[in-house]
Length: 302
Image 1 (cartoon, rainbow, N blue to C red):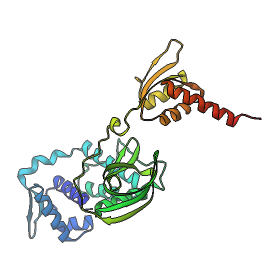
Image 2 (cartoon, helix red, strand yellow; image 1 turned 180 degrees about the horizontal axis):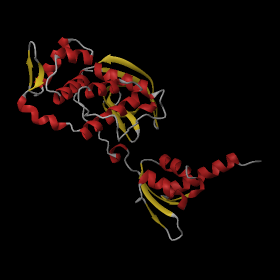
Image 3 (cartoon, rainbow, N blue to C red; image 1 turned 30 degrees about the horizontal axis):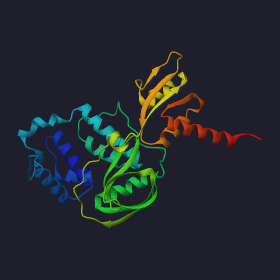
Image 4 (cartoon, rainbow, N blue to C red; image 1 turned 135 degrees about the vertical axis):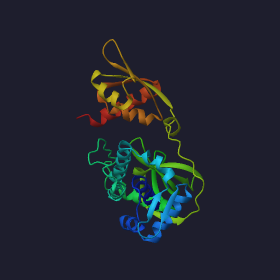
């Protein structure tokens, strides 16, 4: 992709005194004409690049810009590469690994082999998720809509969306785009998308970044109070932090927290089996009691 190539060219120019167009063309597997267009794009972006023709010539960043060659230190470059590796873990390709190899070429050891940070964004859905991400990426690059069936707590619906961002948040992948059905920007969880296809071209509109504050995406409807057995401490710490509960005189853990809907509360409490007691709100306590009775009747032996 052009943006990745521009980043790669800029990185090389920041780390080397001079490089020739044929070298860049061979490294990035494009024509010399394409490299020249990329250099023009970098100049338009404000990077002071000079080119010298003939023997001993080449492409370089102007001398007065040398101070910015230190912008990418070794730890910073390693952090960038760790992020690029994480993208490969999602797509299942070596696209970003190849970019890393190009970034590190000729750096004189700026990017050593030993890395101290590994990020793996792959999920349990390794067979279904990467193809969706690849399809959506392609649609965004070509400014084409995506069509899919979407499953939500409110039911099943057919959507046509202008995609603008792929978002990894709350350990889950989403696509953010303009939903033609709702006539507004919406966030769609990729795991709830089926029958994904590419649609018609669209004219890009000004797209705001998604507001990913939990209070915005998952507004709190219920404040709950739950008593947990001491053995549940590890899960509470893992899921909500060490400050989410207080210890009762009998050793049980009093948890308080907010949830967006009743189903979320009930399903979460049930995962603890008999080690949790929902105290408040009374409305959900009654629902949980009725559900427990239904389950008892269902599984009672004759």
